[in-house]
Amino acid sequence: MADLKFLRKGGLALIFSFLIGIIVFFYFVFKLGPSAFEHITENINLFYIILFFLCSFILFLIATWRARIILNAYKKKIPFFLLLKQIIAGYAISYITPGARVGGEPVRIYMLKKEAGIDYRTGSASVLMDKFVEITGIVVFGLVGVILFVFSPEISYSLKIGVAISLIIVSFLLVFFYLRCIAGKGSFSSLFNLFMLNGFPKLKKYFYFIIDVEKKMGNFFIKHKKAFLNSFVVYALYLIISILQMKFLLLGLGVDASFIMIMVSLTFLVVAEIIPVPAALGLLEAGQSAVFSLFSKGGSVGFAVSIFLRISAIFFVSLGFVFLSHFGWKRLEILLRKVFQTSEKNLERG
Image (cartoon, rainbow, N blue to C red; front, side, top):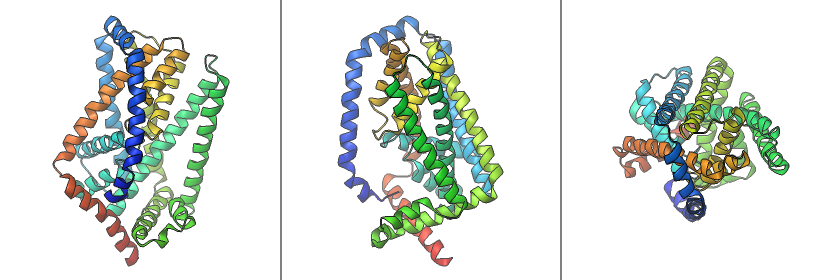
């Protein structure tokens, strides 16, 4: 993670993307908000809504289980509920950064060190491996979604092509990354060399950090194949619960959705979270409204879905910041910088 000076330099881009998100969000609020709230009040089923929120919590339990499998492969033990707290805290940070799927990893690395005594190098490798498993699972899930997407007559041909091309590109990059890791060739450090970024003194410490973590990740792929497979199986369970979660939410809104509709809805959810806008603001609402309009359920249903997804997310984001509050932000800034300094020293020692 870049230090906070770098983050402040990118502040304008963050503010701009956030403003765009706000504009899109309020556009859908004024356009679909009244009809969405009317749909909710007329059709809500609290039993299924409770099951939806229960699934939201179960998803964090599964994510914690997956992270623990990876840590166990590195022979690092950590209490389950302590790790759960760190997963939720990382999610909170990720949610407010551009791209709701990434951003909280450095905080998780720091919390592993501070609360469980796991060194920065191992913590970084385990967290990045966890993220790699997640992204791989998302791509596999997305490929299934695209196949269903392609065979849905309600979807336009140009949109099918665009989504399919995007997933093919991401799939290629993941395979490329995996092959280079098991061959002992780092992808990130190679990019550093390609753009000659390691020639800058202030960036050189990040180069050391990247090489350090890449070695750990390569070792994981080669020596811990069973753990990698197990973590991927656990992620498959995560996806199954995600499907049930969406099914319960739609039943709670009086919509008996087909499997294809749920898969396409979840695919659009992932796409919205990848686009660099904090909290996928506006994009979540736009994507869900578009999906349910395409399936002739009405944009108001999609907007209602996005409301409950946001309520669930905001609850866990708030909980995550409660878990982070006792550290103090100034101290967190200082200790995050030590991640890079420690990796550089470890590499110099060989």
